[in-house]
Image 1 (cartoon, rainbow over the protein chains, first blue to last red):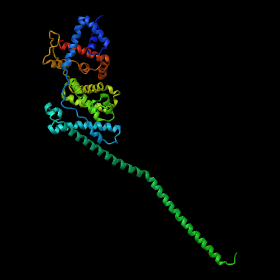
Image 2: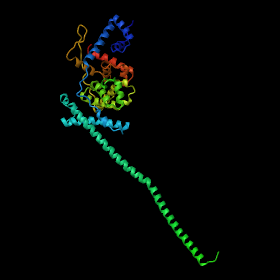
Image 3: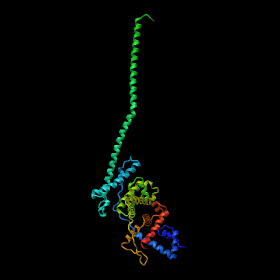
Amino acid sequence: MACPDRTKLMDWVLEELSPGEAEEQERHVHQCAACAQSLASLKDVRQALLKQLVDREMPSHLVFLPEKSKAINPGFLTSLWRTVALAGAAAVVFLGIVLGGYARWGHPPWAVPGAERASMTRAEIETIVRDAVRFQLVQQRQELETTNERLAADLRKEQERALAPVAAQLQYLQSAQSVVWKQTQAQNVLVELIARNSVGREAAQPGRP
Amino acid sequence: MALPIADSSDAVLVRRARDGSTEAFNVLVRRWEQKIYSHLAHLIGRADDAFDLCQEVFISAYTHLGQLRDPERFPPWLFQIAHNTAYSHLRRIREQAAEVSEGEPPQPSLRRLADGTVLERAESKLLVEQALAALPAEQREAIILKVYRGFRFTEIAKIQDCPVSTAKTRVYSGFEQLKKLMGI
């Protein structure tokens, strides 16, 4: 078997080959000193990387939106509102950490050496986050109340505007009704007068059939 | 009996987080923050910036969780966000700097012992990091994703937004380069 492409050896080292392909490479390497040497050096590189590449230690855990905020979150939020509110709350959480850092040390938490940064306890971070979220929710409620008041005022104006022609028409009908009523009364008086005159004439001419 | 939330798989947590459970998302944060932070630190080289960017990555992941079509693919998707965040950051830095200083190319070397194993020295960690730092950023990232995080070439291509052939070339070339730099 001819020597495989070098990338095949790399694929083998990087565990990208199927079991069948790997077996084929292994058979060849057992018979080919040059490929065996290439394989050994590639394995060394991988081994050195695996040994020396370690996860770097984080200065602190990330603080994300606490579960509590969900309970406070009222049901009126639509999905759009919720997205905006969550993004805002996350920004406030971040801001809270910054402000907390300023309040405590005069600079943000990540600007201090690791040891100092670690001195901010979980409870302190949670307090900052809780306050920040509470602040955010209070603001949202105030904004919502202001919006509600504005909408209610707008609605009142709109109703008044819409009802104005109806009110005018009603007034016109009332005055028309009043005129008709007066005319009817006048007619009644007239009819009564005519009736009285007619009775008087009959009394003055007795004997007529 | 249902598993405790902390023992749930990534995919289950993603689905629950999508349904509004911040607790599920917090478990994902705890599970992946160290790896993402480390990855960012390797990419940009500054621990302080890496922490800030790590926050950005998870906030972005949370707000875009609905766009993840297959919850099983959460890890490469998260690393893709980390990649985009890191490169945006690096672009900003490049734009701010009048010229990018490439620095002195490191000349590390790991000596091989007679039995063929690599000589372990106190500074070998530093040498590996120096050798990695000497690689172009895309190669370095591809190597770390492949060797350290165990992603497939197809996933690396997705994370780096490049063809699979490019991802493979980055890993192969990076490997050859590291071999030379480490003197293996």
